[in-house]
Image (cartoon, rainbow, N blue to C red; front, side, top):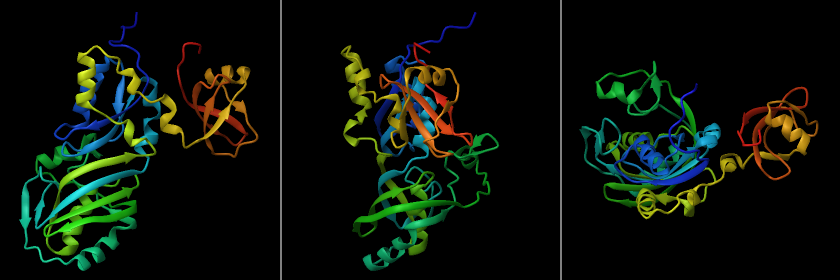
Length: 304
């Protein structure tokens, strides 16, 4: 007999406003306990120093978390000039200091090098894995791993404030962009060093900022015996950018049991979100070379 899973079935996406000082996993575990949820995961780690939007996926939503990992993101960051650290932020060890002799004109000229398509070498203090271990574990042991540069795109990079030795930027970027690297590299280009002192993730994909909820609010509601489920966004909220198809009842039944459906009106290779006549989200599919809508990720429902 299979062991019964602990917790209750919870499905949906929570937009947590992560507080400073907690790792993403620590924040996830606290929220998971508050919901007494069987299954939950986050969608791309934020550093303990960072605050802001951290989508947490519960239950069936975890099947679609990759779409959030792959989505564009926005950040507000403050960099302090004149000091470089091994981690690229204020939590690291100071490894270099230099006088700051930077004009606004020089700063704006150097910032232009970071707009558009750029190549970036991931930080040794990132969560990228090497031989099954995150790079930051090697970094803490003083081990340097060679990392190839990776292409990323900076869609927008706006100078919000330049005040002596502080630079504040608003950045919108593609997946896999390390904001600490931008600040560190900027310091190198300016010849004065730099590191991150504040980092706030302002958005992920098209998720509504006003629906973020703080850990403090969740804990307060839980103590009062209030339901936390009202904060959850629907399972399909991670894939609303995909084209939508609604199946008739017979086709929906076949699809929900893993069978492909003929769909000649769609283009080969398209990834589609699929619904039944009652507007229930069934999962995502891809159109194959036989014009068939082939299931890729299915939502397990009571009537499957």
